[in-house]
Image (cartoon, rainbow, N blue to C red; front, side, top):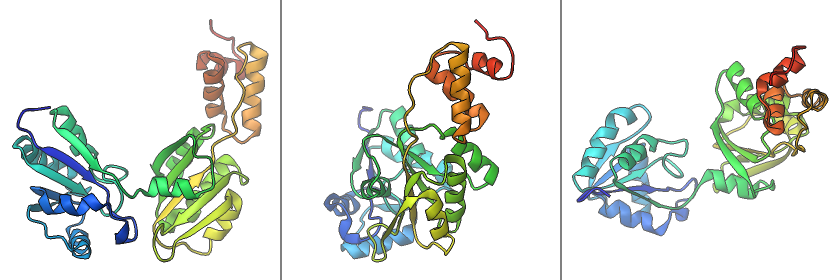
Length: 284
């Protein structure tokens, strides 16, 4: 660690009920030299609910000023100050501001620690009823339909349970795109307003959830989707490669993604599979 440098503290904040705030959060808020908050108005409400008086400097740190504000906060850290970073809900840097500051602190050998606590990702995963032994977090899907479809196509053979954030007004479109890419029978759960008064968890196949979402969705949304069924390894002979591509295409995987996946499973160059599928000679 850099001598005499301060400490960057990433603090989880409640995703719903303030009673879920980690006990150490109040202590950190009261003693930090600098509190960087995604929304200073929400910070005032949080500290009021917790009965905490912030004695340090309060600065805003959100998507719009993250690049410009990071060097300022890094300077404070290098000067020996304790900087506390909080976002509107959950853990900073997880689809929230924070990554740039963490990366800068690590680059300058400044200690980075965290106040663990509420997480919409883990909460949704735990209550979804879907496998939790292996999972991945995919954040928000692209807003544009074409980019969203390409992202989902790239996940067609992902075997881990997947967790997504989504805006309520885009939930129906996101579920419909998932159903088109992965099939209407893929198991999923839509978690709405987690830990809040109107918490709701809808579980079922994607096709059914699309119909539910068509009636309108409100509140904070987290979507959990089961992974693809595991496939056996593929032989590297031409007949096996062609058969594996055909099988994936029959399951709704686009040819480009099927070729990439078969090449990965067979341990051969994707160009070899491409040439086979398109009538060329396999490369050595």
